Image (cartoon, rainbow over all chains, first blue to last red; front, side):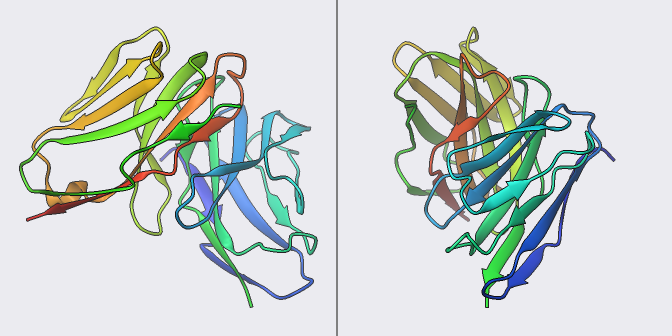
Length: 111
Length: 114
């Protein structure tokens, strides 16, 4: 089945720790995106990538980093510089300007 | 900067009633608009995509209209069912940003009571 796979579903981070969220797609999409969702708020864009080895900052990139070494993979690292990382993280992909598809999300909690 | 608003934030209707969900945006220069459904704790499921040149798009019981000049889109769900209970989000892609970001509204939480 084609789709977007995010892992893990739940993730716990200790203070000062970096954690990496995985996003893999087998839809052959060029563009991939990371969004953050907080209760009662719309999704906010963290990073996006149009092609391999290239990515752009979104509206709230501070404290996050990404890589795009393969077309199908777009991992997100939440660094210790992100002071309020507890949120629901969603990965998406699309062809150029076309319908976007989302993964099932990763819920990150600081412990 | 594009701003997307969804009013009301929450809506409760009895089963069988038609649902009308509103989405407004401040910049009419859009490339397309997409409606999504989100169940609690889950990712987003795409419902409909409307290109800027289209006036409406239909899929089963769902119909979405787009009035670009007034900055509005409406999602109609006919003959609502309890399984339609979810949060519905709209998102727009700017006309100069066809590769890039979707700007989201905060969503409308819908409850359909049996």
